[in-house]
Length: 116
Image 1 (tube, one colour):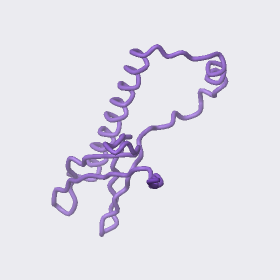
Image 2 (cartoon, rainbow, N blue to C red):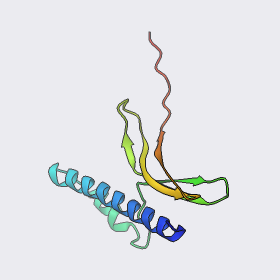
Image 3 (cartoon, rainbow, N blue to C red):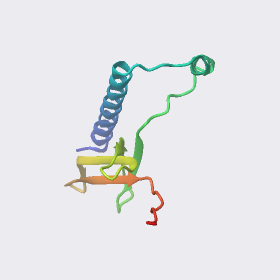
């Protein structure tokens, strides 16, 4: 797999992941009676259309021993523990004529609760 093919693959993966997240968010908005009060509507109207849309996906960059970088999209996830963070199952990428895969997990650290 060439560097360009790998970049194209991960860009498509990122786009697909963001589309799935958007679909889930749209379903929640459609299924729930979401009430937007006037203040929120005014804020949305005042927002500049030229402002870039904030992505909900974090990007992890793996720097390989030879300096090559592989970008991995990390969509948001709520883990079984209830912690929020980002997670990706890496299907496959080629480095040095070898195929690699794996997982990346990143979560918000929360203070431990002391038992009283």
